[in-house]
Length: 108
Image 1 (cartoon, rainbow, N blue to C red):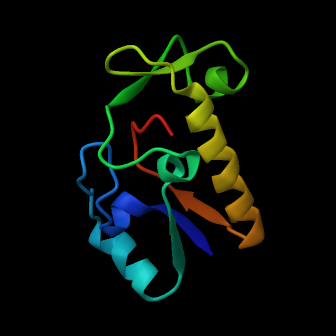
Image 2 (image 1 turned 180 degrees about the vertical axis):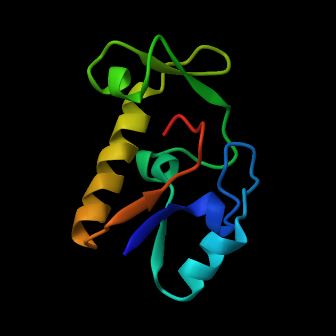
């Protein structure tokens, strides 16, 4: 099973309420070769939401407490992103995921 970002499959779940449809990804989902996930929604965010970016490092740095994820406006939303990441990992384990395709440059 392949795990893919929901927005790449055409779901309008990005921060601004849009998708990033990739027809190849959508075809994999339609053929039941891939499952969709939105780490942000699993973390507790809604759509639309303020944009956010990693400040002070990488995703790994966020996990070890050396960086933050901050929304436009300054709110630190690191904990919600971490929650979504771990819930995504659990889904990947449950469904024996072998490959993952996530949206490039997303804080998740």
